[in-house]
Length: 120
Image (cartoon, rainbow, N blue to C red):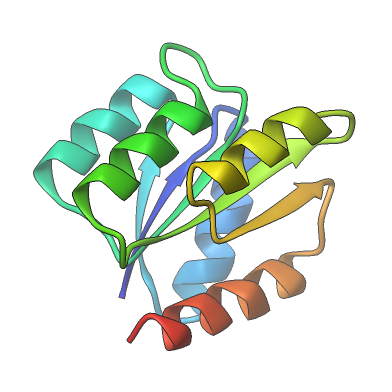
């Protein structure tokens, strides 16, 4: 199973990547929205984890792109507190789940596993 992570905060991205690789997933790291969209053009992963606020292309743009290519690819949106309207928009665009920062890595891993199992 392949997971694309779009997160511009280096420590957060590395921490999530390491946790998911430890869980046995193949991880594609992207530092901004532009890189994420380029990678998504090449290969559509089983799951995308995207921050809402990214340079060059937002998490909502990434979500919109993924859902236009495949309804079966799951998307988890990461958001900071106070972005309730944006999270609402994300669900309207087809987000499968969202997690408010800061979050527990084990909780993220459980949610990833649940979504991937549901979409098999």
